Image (cartoon, rainbow, N blue to C red; front, side):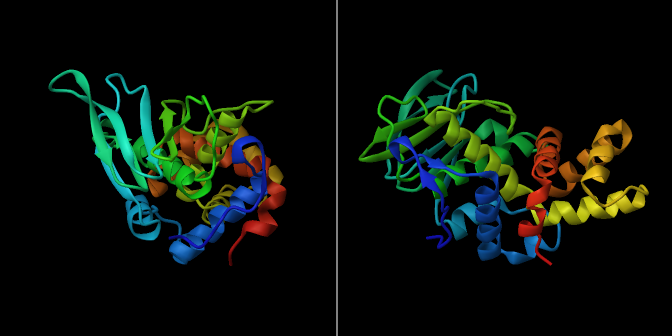
Length: 257
Protein backbone atom coordinates (compact mmCIF):
# COMPACT_ATOMS: atom_id res chain seq x y z
CA UNK A 1 0.00 0.00 0.00
CA UNK A 2 1.16 3.55 -0.72
CA UNK A 3 2.27 5.45 2.37
CA UNK A 4 1.59 8.89 0.89
CA UNK A 5 -1.83 10.35 1.69
CA UNK A 6 -3.75 13.47 0.73
CA UNK A 7 -3.97 15.84 3.69
CA UNK A 8 -6.82 18.33 3.50
CA UNK A 9 -10.18 19.16 5.05
CA UNK A 10 -13.16 16.90 4.37
CA UNK A 11 -16.63 17.89 3.28
CA UNK A 12 -19.98 16.09 2.99
CA UNK A 13 -19.67 12.32 2.78
CA UNK A 14 -15.93 12.37 3.42
CA UNK A 15 -15.23 14.23 0.17
CA UNK A 16 -11.77 15.87 0.31
CA UNK A 17 -11.73 19.62 -0.33
CA UNK A 18 -8.14 19.99 -1.49
CA UNK A 19 -6.54 23.13 -2.87
CA UNK A 20 -4.33 23.18 -5.95
CA UNK A 21 -1.25 23.36 -3.71
CA UNK A 22 -2.40 20.38 -1.64
CA UNK A 23 -3.03 18.34 -4.78
CA UNK A 24 0.30 19.32 -6.35
CA UNK A 25 2.23 18.49 -3.17
CA UNK A 26 0.44 15.17 -2.87
CA UNK A 27 1.23 14.26 -6.48
CA UNK A 28 4.86 15.30 -6.03
CA UNK A 29 5.27 13.25 -2.86
CA UNK A 30 3.64 10.20 -4.44
CA UNK A 31 5.93 10.43 -7.48
CA UNK A 32 8.97 10.80 -5.20
CA UNK A 33 7.90 7.66 -3.36
CA UNK A 34 7.27 5.79 -6.63
CA UNK A 35 10.21 6.95 -8.77
CA UNK A 36 11.94 10.24 -7.85
CA UNK A 37 13.77 10.39 -11.19
CA UNK A 38 10.47 11.36 -12.82
CA UNK A 39 10.74 14.80 -11.20
CA UNK A 40 14.20 15.63 -12.51
CA UNK A 41 14.37 13.72 -15.82
CA UNK A 42 11.27 14.51 -17.92
CA UNK A 43 9.88 11.26 -19.33
CA UNK A 44 6.74 9.18 -19.78
CA UNK A 45 5.37 7.90 -16.46
CA UNK A 46 4.79 4.14 -16.45
CA UNK A 47 1.18 4.28 -15.24
CA UNK A 48 0.65 0.51 -15.38
CA UNK A 49 3.62 -0.02 -13.07
CA UNK A 50 2.47 2.75 -10.76
CA UNK A 51 -0.99 1.19 -10.49
CA UNK A 52 -0.04 -2.48 -10.30
CA UNK A 53 3.30 -2.40 -8.44
CA UNK A 54 3.27 0.78 -6.37
CA UNK A 55 -0.44 1.01 -5.56
CA UNK A 56 -0.77 -2.80 -5.63
CA UNK A 57 -4.03 -2.60 -7.51
CA UNK A 58 -5.52 -4.89 -10.12
CA UNK A 59 -5.82 -3.42 -13.63
CA UNK A 60 -8.33 -4.88 -16.10
CA UNK A 61 -9.40 -3.84 -19.60
CA UNK A 62 -13.00 -4.49 -20.64
CA UNK A 63 -15.71 -2.98 -22.81
CA UNK A 64 -17.61 -1.15 -20.10
CA UNK A 65 -20.54 0.26 -22.09
CA UNK A 66 -21.66 -0.06 -25.70
CA UNK A 67 -21.02 3.60 -26.61
CA UNK A 68 -18.15 4.44 -24.22
CA UNK A 69 -20.41 6.43 -21.91
CA UNK A 70 -18.19 5.27 -19.03
CA UNK A 71 -14.44 5.04 -19.55
CA UNK A 72 -13.18 3.94 -16.14
CA UNK A 73 -14.30 2.20 -12.96
CA UNK A 74 -12.57 2.03 -9.58
CA UNK A 75 -13.67 -0.72 -7.17
CA UNK A 76 -12.39 -0.61 -3.58
CA UNK A 77 -13.85 -3.71 -1.89
CA UNK A 78 -14.37 -6.00 -4.86
CA UNK A 79 -17.73 -7.25 -6.05
CA UNK A 80 -19.70 -7.52 -9.28
CA UNK A 81 -19.93 -4.88 -12.01
CA UNK A 82 -21.79 -4.79 -15.36
CA UNK A 83 -19.73 -4.79 -18.57
CA UNK A 84 -20.74 -4.97 -22.22
CA UNK A 85 -20.20 -8.13 -24.27
CA UNK A 86 -19.57 -6.89 -27.82
CA UNK A 87 -20.01 -10.31 -29.42
CA UNK A 88 -23.36 -11.00 -27.75
CA UNK A 89 -24.34 -7.32 -27.81
CA UNK A 90 -25.61 -7.48 -24.25
CA UNK A 91 -24.50 -6.64 -20.73
CA UNK A 92 -23.09 -9.27 -18.40
CA UNK A 93 -21.81 -9.30 -14.82
CA UNK A 94 -18.11 -9.47 -13.99
CA UNK A 95 -16.65 -10.35 -10.61
CA UNK A 96 -13.58 -8.32 -9.63
CA UNK A 97 -11.23 -8.45 -6.61
CA UNK A 98 -10.67 -5.56 -4.17
CA UNK A 99 -8.64 -2.56 -5.37
CA UNK A 100 -9.46 -2.98 -9.04
CA UNK A 101 -9.33 -0.39 -11.80
CA UNK A 102 -11.21 -1.17 -15.01
CA UNK A 103 -10.50 0.91 -18.12
CA UNK A 104 -12.44 0.65 -21.37
CA UNK A 105 -10.30 -1.57 -23.58
CA UNK A 106 -11.05 0.50 -26.68
CA UNK A 107 -8.94 3.30 -25.21
CA UNK A 108 -5.94 0.96 -24.99
CA UNK A 109 -6.36 0.11 -28.68
CA UNK A 110 -5.91 3.77 -29.63
CA UNK A 111 -2.51 4.28 -31.27
CA UNK A 112 -1.79 7.51 -29.38
CA UNK A 113 -3.05 6.09 -26.03
CA UNK A 114 -3.18 9.56 -24.50
CA UNK A 115 -6.79 9.20 -23.41
CA UNK A 116 -6.12 5.71 -22.04
CA UNK A 117 -3.23 6.96 -19.91
CA UNK A 118 -5.25 9.92 -18.65
CA UNK A 119 -8.20 7.69 -17.74
CA UNK A 120 -5.91 5.27 -15.90
CA UNK A 121 -4.30 8.15 -13.98
CA UNK A 122 -7.77 9.57 -13.20
CA UNK A 123 -8.91 6.24 -11.73
CA UNK A 124 -5.63 5.90 -9.80
CA UNK A 125 -6.39 9.27 -8.20
CA UNK A 126 -9.78 7.99 -7.04
CA UNK A 127 -8.09 4.88 -5.64
CA UNK A 128 -5.56 6.75 -3.51
CA UNK A 129 -7.76 9.66 -2.39
CA UNK A 130 -11.41 8.63 -2.23
CA UNK A 131 -11.67 5.25 -0.51
CA UNK A 132 -13.60 6.71 2.46
CA UNK A 133 -16.15 8.67 0.42
CA UNK A 134 -19.79 7.78 1.04
CA UNK A 135 -22.44 9.61 -1.00
CA UNK A 136 -25.90 7.96 -0.97
CA UNK A 137 -27.81 8.08 -4.28
CA UNK A 138 -24.77 9.29 -6.20
CA UNK A 139 -24.44 8.26 -9.86
CA UNK A 140 -20.65 8.69 -9.70
CA UNK A 141 -19.78 6.74 -6.56
CA UNK A 142 -22.08 3.83 -5.76
CA UNK A 143 -22.06 1.40 -2.87
CA UNK A 144 -21.04 -2.17 -3.67
CA UNK A 145 -20.02 -4.96 -1.30
CA UNK A 146 -19.63 -2.55 1.62
CA UNK A 147 -17.36 -0.20 -0.34
CA UNK A 148 -17.52 2.48 -2.98
CA UNK A 149 -17.38 1.98 -6.75
CA UNK A 150 -16.58 4.97 -8.96
CA UNK A 151 -18.20 4.92 -12.42
CA UNK A 152 -16.50 7.72 -14.36
CA UNK A 153 -18.23 9.13 -17.41
CA UNK A 154 -16.52 10.12 -20.65
CA UNK A 155 -15.69 13.81 -20.42
CA UNK A 156 -12.90 16.01 -21.76
CA UNK A 157 -9.50 15.33 -20.25
CA UNK A 158 -9.28 17.71 -17.34
CA UNK A 159 -11.46 20.28 -19.09
CA UNK A 160 -14.18 20.48 -16.45
CA UNK A 161 -14.84 23.74 -14.63
CA UNK A 162 -17.46 24.40 -11.96
CA UNK A 163 -17.89 27.57 -9.91
CA UNK A 164 -19.91 25.97 -7.10
CA UNK A 165 -18.92 22.32 -7.00
CA UNK A 166 -21.21 19.55 -5.81
CA UNK A 167 -19.54 16.68 -3.89
CA UNK A 168 -19.43 14.60 -7.10
CA UNK A 169 -17.89 17.48 -9.01
CA UNK A 170 -15.23 17.94 -6.33
CA UNK A 171 -14.28 14.28 -6.73
CA UNK A 172 -14.05 14.44 -10.52
CA UNK A 173 -12.17 17.76 -10.49
CA UNK A 174 -9.62 16.32 -8.05
CA UNK A 175 -9.18 13.15 -10.09
CA UNK A 176 -8.73 15.19 -13.29
CA UNK A 177 -6.24 17.52 -11.60
CA UNK A 178 -4.21 14.68 -10.12
CA UNK A 179 -4.22 12.77 -13.41
CA UNK A 180 -2.47 15.73 -15.02
CA UNK A 181 -0.07 16.07 -12.09
CA UNK A 182 0.79 12.34 -12.10
CA UNK A 183 1.40 12.21 -15.85
CA UNK A 184 3.16 15.59 -16.12
CA UNK A 185 4.93 16.33 -12.81
CA UNK A 186 5.20 20.06 -12.20
CA UNK A 187 8.96 20.06 -11.67
CA UNK A 188 9.56 18.33 -15.01
CA UNK A 189 7.22 20.67 -16.87
CA UNK A 190 8.94 23.70 -15.34
CA UNK A 191 12.37 22.54 -16.51
CA UNK A 192 11.17 21.90 -20.08
CA UNK A 193 9.34 25.20 -20.38
CA UNK A 194 12.28 27.14 -18.91
CA UNK A 195 14.62 25.73 -21.57
CA UNK A 196 12.13 26.52 -24.31
CA UNK A 197 11.62 30.08 -23.04
CA UNK A 198 15.37 30.68 -23.17
CA UNK A 199 15.50 29.19 -26.66
CA UNK A 200 12.77 31.60 -27.77
CA UNK A 201 14.42 34.58 -26.11
CA UNK A 202 11.58 34.94 -23.62
CA UNK A 203 11.88 35.73 -19.94
CA UNK A 204 11.81 32.77 -17.55
CA UNK A 205 8.93 34.13 -15.52
CA UNK A 206 5.15 34.20 -15.37
CA UNK A 207 5.13 36.90 -18.07
CA UNK A 208 7.31 34.68 -20.29
CA UNK A 209 4.87 31.77 -19.84
CA UNK A 210 1.94 34.03 -20.73
CA UNK A 211 3.67 35.30 -23.87
CA UNK A 212 4.61 31.75 -24.90
CA UNK A 213 1.00 30.59 -24.62
CA UNK A 214 -0.36 33.72 -26.30
CA UNK A 215 1.78 33.16 -29.39
CA UNK A 216 0.17 30.49 -31.55
CA UNK A 217 3.47 29.13 -32.90
CA UNK A 218 5.23 28.74 -29.55
CA UNK A 219 2.09 27.40 -27.86
CA UNK A 220 1.58 24.73 -30.52
CA UNK A 221 5.23 23.67 -30.35
CA UNK A 222 5.39 23.29 -26.56
CA UNK A 223 1.99 21.53 -26.45
CA UNK A 224 3.05 19.03 -29.11
CA UNK A 225 6.39 18.42 -27.41
CA UNK A 226 4.86 17.80 -23.98
CA UNK A 227 2.24 15.55 -25.57
CA UNK A 228 4.96 13.45 -27.20
CA UNK A 229 7.31 13.41 -24.20
CA UNK A 230 4.75 12.51 -21.54
CA UNK A 231 2.48 10.32 -23.68
CA UNK A 232 -0.63 12.44 -23.23
CA UNK A 233 -3.09 14.08 -25.60
CA UNK A 234 -2.44 17.61 -26.81
CA UNK A 235 -5.55 18.72 -24.96
CA UNK A 236 -4.22 17.33 -21.67
CA UNK A 237 -0.81 18.96 -22.27
CA UNK A 238 -2.40 22.33 -23.04
CA UNK A 239 -4.57 22.17 -19.91
CA UNK A 240 -1.57 21.25 -17.75
CA UNK A 241 0.43 24.23 -19.08
CA UNK A 242 -2.43 26.62 -18.40
CA UNK A 243 -3.01 25.13 -14.95
CA UNK A 244 0.64 25.60 -13.95
CA UNK A 245 0.57 29.15 -15.33
CA UNK A 246 -2.56 29.91 -13.30
CA UNK A 247 -0.84 28.63 -10.16
CA UNK A 248 2.64 29.94 -11.05
CA UNK A 249 3.18 31.45 -7.54
CA UNK A 250 3.13 27.87 -6.18
CA UNK A 251 6.26 27.05 -8.18
CA UNK A 252 8.65 27.71 -5.29
CA UNK A 253 6.93 24.96 -3.28
CA UNK A 254 6.90 22.37 -6.06
CA UNK A 255 10.27 22.48 -7.79
CA UNK A 256 12.68 19.63 -7.12
CA UNK A 257 16.31 20.45 -7.86
